[in-house]
Length: 205
Image (cartoon, rainbow, N blue to C red; front, side, top):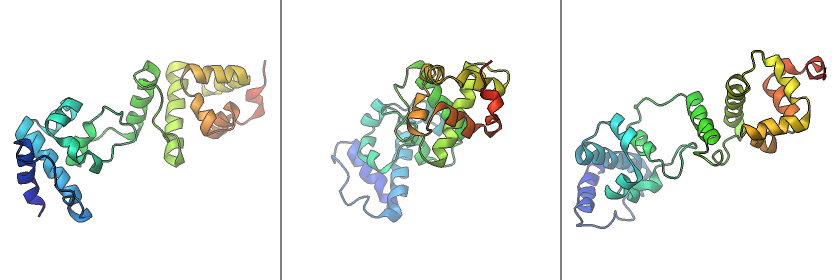
């Protein structure tokens, strides 16, 4: 029964047992519940944290000390998680904990790429329909906050020369969009903003 898992986890914490049995998480029906019980016990009874506090403060070192690395393979990280992020352990254990909306998660990732905290976007971040939505959020942010365009119709003027367009995309870390998702800067802009397809916007003055 899932409730017995906490007793086995206590034995691991006390050093009486090195790891869980290889058969412990075989039954997919109870796997999630077992993993949640372990993480909740670690947070509430060992660290004596609230879920909100745990999401803020839980570190990779805590994961090792709490022996939670033994169950890491059963908790799939979200696409935006970095290698040393562990906040998602808490979100997995407490599914009703409020999450950042998708747009804020995308902007968090993009701002970390811009600042150099991340060397690049997560693998496959811009693939699929969801990826196209993320791409649009990033380009919207670039236009509004980095290029500081007062009118979106100014974008074609900046992107009308391919070399300049690539230079801007590289500067603002979005060249990957043309490398993986679109045929050209022109294609990217006109796909994202169909209202800018009018050739008049692309004529050099």
